[in-house]
Amino acid sequence: MIQEKAIGDAPSAQAEFPTQAELQRATAPFQTPTLRESLSQIVTSFGGFILTCTGMYLLAAQSYWLALLPAPLAALFLVRIFIIQHDCGHYSFFRSRRANNVTGFICGLLTLTPYTSWRRQHAGHHGIWNDLDRRQSGADIYSSCLTTDEYKALSPRQRWAYRTARHPLVANLLLPPLIFLLLYRLPFDMPRDWQRERRGVYLTNIALLGLLTGLGLLLGFERVVLVQLPVMILAAIVGVWLFSVQHRSESTQWFRHDRWSAQAASIEGSTFLNLPRILRWFTGNIGYHHVHHLNPRVPNYRLKSCHEALPTLHGASQLSFRGGMRALWYVLWDEGREKMVTLRQLNREQPQGNAPA
Image (cartoon, rainbow, N blue to C red; front, side, top):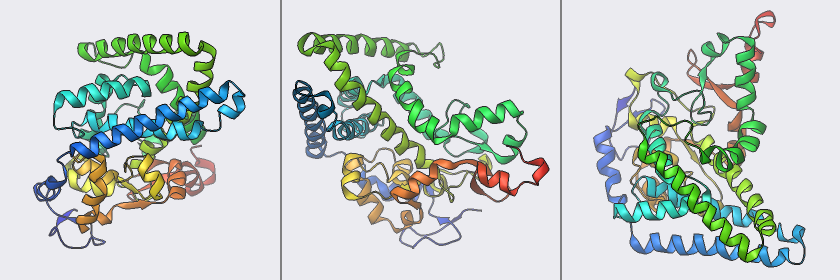
């Protein structure tokens, strides 16, 4: 059971936390956006992306394979633009709500994301993350999971579907490009009363059609596809990986609703992906995900300083880059042992005749 403790105390093995109100007060000084920092991120992110893509178009005139060499760099800049969009969706990038929405929509044109609907769906995630009694639908394979008992109760065909959809090659290589390129073009999963969000999908598609048509007429449609498609595919894979490991590791905790609290779920249910400095820059410090969930109004460029200022936050489950790759295999919650497990671990621990594979 979660117990309370003072803000300044170091984290202990008993998972003691301050109250939500205390943590909100402690993080409040970090949630005010700084206009200079925000504008600097826009210039470096958009500028770096445009310059890198321009270089790719110039190289494509000589050799398409040579033009692909800067594609990973362009993809990383695009990931950083998505983090700006993410902050705008939480109204944490600018003080002005309108400035956040305009900037978020522009970011969405580059990331192929309908900003208005994405913002609302993502807000839903922030209300229920790692709550076993309020999990999102089975279609959300990146921030939800089954318990081991639920998995065992599935039919063989259902277990196969669950394993396949959550295999890293499928969930983190094949599906991400399909989500951004195809699924985001349709409001297929939105309630009918989300009229504004549905219009946002169509408006994004119209704006994208105009943007791509203009680029195609200027540079050639084949060249636009050959340059932008691989960049988008790489960015989608990296971005989905970043967000999928934010609630997955062997030590990540899930809670029944009567034991769930925002502060416990932030520190124990969200990971601290401790990336090398250059990757922290490109990923907008989203690895400090435990801080982000504790207070989504903290802009990405202040997450690190917030984490360092509050020792209580140092108890979050920490992942290295390599650990983040291993975390993709943890797709089940063992409620009896209160730990995440892999499908291989579950099968290994079952009696041979009763293995649920």
